[in-house]
Image (cartoon, rainbow, N blue to C red; front, side, top):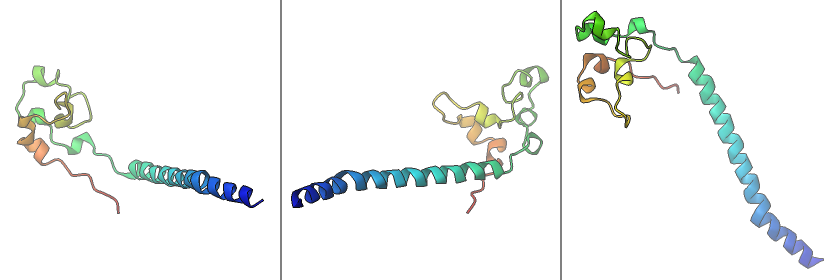
Amino acid sequence: MNNILIVLIGISLRLIIPIAITVLIVYLLHKLDERWQREALQEPHLETTSQLECWRIQDCPPEQYKECPAYATHQPCWQVHRLHNGYLRDECLTCIVFRTAPVPAHAS
């Protein structure tokens, strides 16, 4: 009987407790993810009217800016014109549109 009890204790220490801890961590991370999703829905979204329009600052002619992907989207121009690796273009880093873009606020 003692041997069976020792084996059961060994199994619980080696298997059941780590599995229970893993399940608890997964549950807590799921709750955290739900909270972050709720907070993301509550954040105010920027309107395009409050953003600077790069085609006006760059003084682009209408035939040029009407074909520009930034003109047709609600995203800032520097987001639309990112390089294929995700980096910003050098001209965007010094542009007034990028430099005056609002920084996202973090909820505490």
